Image (cartoon, rainbow, N blue to C red; front, top):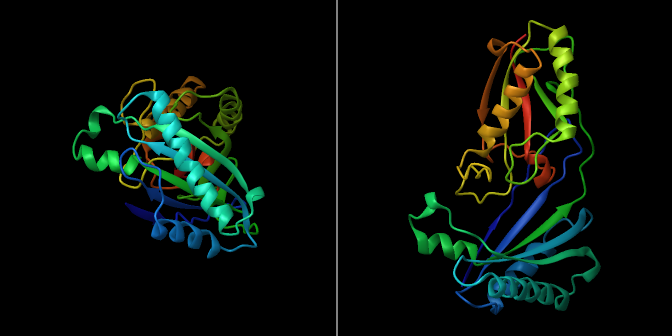
Length: 270
């Protein structure tokens, strides 16, 4: 048995940045027992975090793709419950553990057949997520939530409603409503040129890009950026003013996974 910890600690000045600390415990095939070292590791992970900022704890169990769905769901739930029981017995208050969920199996996609045993071993795990309260808001020049009259090259426009469902590049009604407003401003400030940057969340560190469920191809962030490009073009924004690019999971906001399923604009010519 082995465990791994990664701490994605990020800050974005234009937002009330929220941090997530994630600790993963890895299990042997078909097992949900926890040895002493594993248990001490996950307890220390929580107890060494800033207790004044811990808002909640979430526990998610997973399995590999071997076996039937019902069995894997039960196994992943048992793994999550094992971690929860260890935390409570170690003095961590149960009321801050808001989620204990077995997610079942993680499928191996067609483009992940290399090192298959290792891939599967990384899916036999429980993720413990600490959600920390936001840091105080700090304004940083160059970050905006709307198109301004005067921009400089490199300015980021983060569109708060331009978010996507998990695994989807389809624009929501809220996203289209905000893009309608952006299109009007872009028509007003005709000299602005920009790159449309697509992003994803929730992929492991070794997998920089996610799969678009509609196409089954691993280019979700690119598809999200292209969806915005096409919509703005439909709204009569000249294509020569725009480029688009997918950035995968390489630029998280640090505010929460749902906020990383996003597209933002970066000014390339003012």
